[in-house]
Image (tube, rainbow, N blue to C red):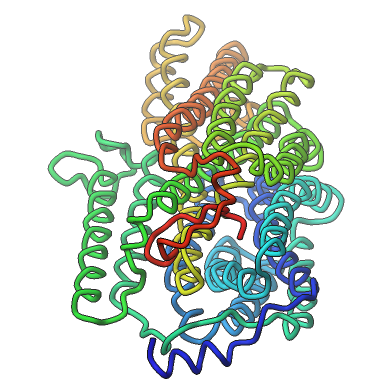
Length: 562
């Protein structure tokens, strides 16, 4: 340690004993998760307000998560450079500006600017700083309580979001959600002076601009390729594919280019480290087995949850015909169960290994996806649907209660900023890919099932079948069956043919939704393979302190809470 390091460490204020900083940080966590949970039940309203399509709103939601994922590492590094509390404040101001723009957005373009871009950049500064500030303001058992509270508030945001979004959209407008966020941010900023800045040892690092550009572009291209796969085709090009390199869909090349840029990013980080310069992120952190397993778990959790949260409102609103408030009420079991399971999970970690709890959560999530798949019928089975959603909430809550603490407990104070950046990058990348991937699966499945249904329907003439097949060749949007009937009548089709088309489309809707939920279940099953390196000590072993290995070198804390 250099003299400068010693001076800075000594000058750092001691963790506070007041719980007021936790209130400010908890409200910030609530605001960060509110958008994602509240707006999923407002998809139909957004489509109507902006006279657009489900696919466009899917892209806006995906882009919001993606911007966070693209700039989370950069946001964490900026916090290391200028101070975590300053980054927290700047991020909140940018986020509030984005919320204000979104609240008055007259078009999809302005909606995207406010919601996806400004809010996404603001959150990329706030979230990594928030994690470091928790560690900087609390220590020992208090830190465990603080992390549990933040996890519980995240669950509360998910719980309140659908009801709040549904109520606001049905009774007033979805816009008041964003106006309310501006007021909440103002409240947080008033309390922020009570938040002690997190300790930083050593001189401020330098920002790796090339690394930031490579990571953002690589992640962006991968998610863009997945998002556009329903329109461009996965391998075989569809009519909407702008170009067809070598006869293949553009999707393959966009995802491939993104992968190449991410490889270049890792190579560049290694080069900067070997030459003694500050990388955007020390990739050696990924050598810590428990941290790596925690990141994969967070990625999987958000991929599954946000994918389901995008899929289920399509069923409830466009198939069953519920409004936003009724949709929020039907989704309440998953939110309440997630909140309760998240709170209970912190207690379970004192009696059971983290790995066992996470595996139980994934198994329950997989079973929930299967049960939800069975409930996708023309008429909503209220009881079965509620139980399946509650089971999903329990599974997701068990994951949420463990994984964030695993990541942060795998490093010492000097690595928490970068670990926070990796943590939220994994979460938001999972969220963006969840919406993009399951959305693409549902939309592609809808097109293929509809074309297959009409081609085998004896009630529909071959000429009509061929015309519809050509029109649907580039992909169709997820709309209500009433819109399909109206479109068929406008095209001059007779009533029997129109009725047959509506029947075939309704059948295709159900099949597509089931395919998406089946994919979610398979993803939960696949995620089990990556839990082997999660902490698996019995509680007594985890509570015994170690003195032989420094945490910052890659050791896993025996007690992840401390």
